[in-house]
Image (cartoon, rainbow, N blue to C red; front, side, top):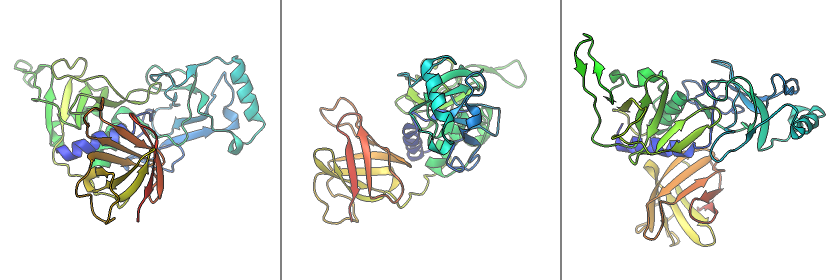
Length: 360
């Protein structure tokens, strides 16, 4: 894929960190009415059922359940870093008390606590009905590793692609495939040498044989849907010189950038103790200035800083260019960015929380 699509892919992936993993999911929320990638828009159901409160059997409270593929119940990232939950026992006093409080109410009146109990089923370390307190799945997007690839690629390019892992590394996809290990030619005698690109590009796909797939940035950051007890993460530092268990790199070609939505384009007043003005433009470019815009339809002539943003409601993630004196790039995450809204709030990895209000 081209640099612009690759950059958008990484922006989308970054905005999904903390989402949940369940086998067979392509970005759907369990209560979102089929809001995942169009190749598989649904399949994930939220469990809120008075018949699912037995801690010795099929306990699940506000946990996602897979309805299409293998039966799975999301573990809610309980073993993420830092830990978001914990393992439990059917006789734990807090669990007994919590379940008793639910039995007296209809599910519509159940409180959606940050952590809820469930017996997790599915591939990986969460398999086998392990009783855990995990993060509530309500309103959270769910992926498996290959569904994560499809969703991010769709959001960035508008192309809907649904493939098994092995098919993503098929040269017929129209891109370059690099095998890090020597392999036999079809004659079974001649050995084809290992291949590596000269360097990494945003949106490169890295693969472990036929069992795992992820995106990598030009800086080597890996973005992946890991497993039900961990979820979507960015971690590690992939190196072409030492790829480890990663066996292939795929660089897709031919994709163009998805068309920009009308929202959130335009000017926003931003306050974090000081006042700034952000201009969200096309192609995922955002600019900031401390000067009040005289024309709310055009970009600033002399921006103070420029960054890139990914829009994946209810999140918008801005990554600003590194400025002198800062320890790293500033990343701002708007967490209630609904299309058409006039105000939205964000956290920053370097500075104070901020609120943005649309101008004009």
